[in-house]
Amino acid sequence: MRSVHDAALPSHPRGQRELLLLGLLALGLLALLQLAAAPAHADATHIDAVNFNMDVDPGSASFLTGAINTAQHDGASLLLINLDTPGGDLDSMKTIEQAELASAVPIVVYVSPSGGRAASAGTFVALAAPVVAMAPNTRIGAASPIDSSGGNLPSTLDTKIKNDLEADIRSLQTSYGRNVELAVSTVESAKAYDDTEAIDGHLVNLGAASQAELLSRLDGTSTTLHNGTTVMLHTAGLPVTLIEQSFTDQLKTVLFNPTVVFILFIVAAICIYLELAHPGAIVPGTVGVIALVLFLFGAGSLNPNWAGLVLMLLAIVLLAIDVRVPTHGVLTAGALVCLVVGSLIFFNSNAGSGGPTLSPLIIGAFAAGVGLVSLLVLRYAISAQRRPVTTGREGLIGQRARVTVPLAPAGRVKLTGEDWAARLSERAAGQRIEVDRDVRVAAVEGLTLIVEPLKPQ
Image 1: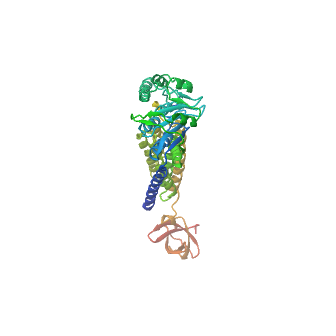
Image 2: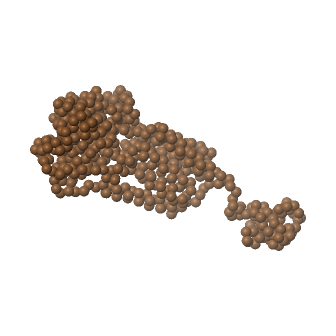
């Protein structure tokens, strides 16, 4: 089965305030998206239906638990979940299962259409409902745990997780009066059953060739919820309202993907790094803050090891320091090590138990990209430090001036449109420079230019 988891520059306080405001704006945008996803309310009795034909992961778990919540608040008499899933991660499965068990509205899981399956974590999603039905040529089971790469778990960990899952599925089937032995075998020995075997063995409640037939067969029957409440089902003639994924649900599906979460952090890291290297640029800082907020939003769904985030943030700090206090790339190398190690800790700490993980190849590739960007920034910073100063007094040295009052040795010259007092340098002592001759500025002493002839006199 698939996993049952899956040079020092001036500061700009004004720019920093703008970045803070942009960060708050990003948080407000997320809040508005949450409000936009709030369920609408309906007064008339009806049946809510939802099509769950996706992996069991944080994004889909958020969608399905939201649908369960909607059914409990919009006047629905029943929630019908049309299920077809290959499985997913354990934590998301637990989230869905808990929402099903706590529902005050009867839930019917219908494994459909023909050829569909409730595999792996989907077995638990199905059996957590008071009523489970299967369409012809569907199957359920193969719920043994494996790690995120599809391999077997270490023996001790495998035993622990299997025992926990077996106890869970045994409790579900006992609560609803269905076959415990067949359910346990789906975990213990990865057994899978087709619709005929599951119906005849009472692993599920019934079979139906279509949704209409299912609702017809359920009308007038009673079922017992997990809390012990017995409910009479009235399904005949009731309109069926389909709950579809909203824009927010689709956004969560994207943002809850570990790879997307990691890319958001890399974008945030590079942009914030560029802003720190060139204060006042604003655009990199703006993009960086927004990406960081979205990263934190998505990361919260992955059950990560937050200690890794400390190392990842330290990488940004080290990169920023290396720009201001060049260390010939030593801090940059340390930053890349922190980024790689921190990312592995942050995303892959639950790999042994089958949790969502991030490929080390992706981490390495993006770390190399960050290294390339930092190398370019460092090269620019070092060349800027070595570049001759072209402003202030130092910027006058080496420039050409024209004599307006003969230098013998003192006189006056015109430089960049301004009249300056000037004096010949010691090396030019004893010479006389006539009017309209050009001289070169060798030094600046107060308001007097120390000059030398361009050619020996």
